[in-house]
Structure formats: structure tokens, C-alpha cells
Amino acid sequence: MKLISNRSLGEFALRHADAAAPLQDFRRLIERGEYRNFAALRATFASVDKVGGRYVFNIGGNKYRLVAAIAYSVQVLWVKAVLTHAEYDKEDWK
Image (cartoon, rainbow, N blue to C red; front, side, top):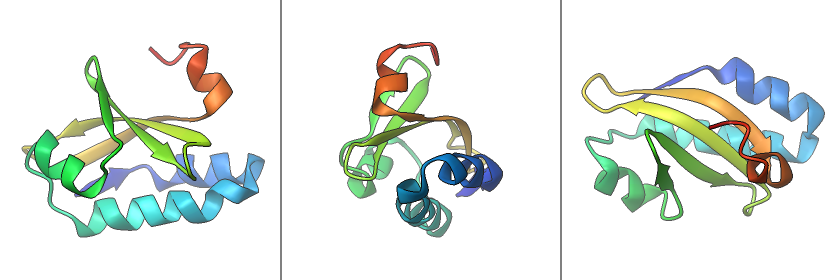
């Protein structure tokens, strides 16, 4: 699956240095995998949740949240937001 965009991961990591390694681990798992549906995605990312039309991933031991859109048919994941847990709880990302 292709991840768009790694730049947003890097920008978040500049503000939260401890997120850099977990975000890049996430990117590598996404890019090495082929996920044809939510069940296949959940087989790799057990804590992923579907919220409306978005997918929410726990990053860094549930310290951060990555919100994404996924097009399974073309194997693309778009990063919509990377947030601290507190930012996520405000629900401004919806």
C-alpha cells in the first residue's frame, strides 16, 4: 500500500521527537503490506478503529493518533492528521 504523505509524519515528528520512530515503523508496515479490506488491515494493526469514513491508528503506545483515509481498491492510504491524544480528544479532526 502507498502512504501519502510521509512529509506529514516528518513534520509531526519535528514537534514530537519521540513519535519519529513509531511513525516510521507505521509507514514501513503500511508500505510493505497489501490490505484489501478492514479485516486485513486489522490483522496487522489490531487497535485500528474505523470512525465514520476514517481510520484511526494508535501510534507510540497510544500516545499519538494517526487519522487516515484508505482506498483499498488502489492501495493508497492518505494521512489526514497526526495528533497527540489530547488533540484527538477535542474531535476537531472530524
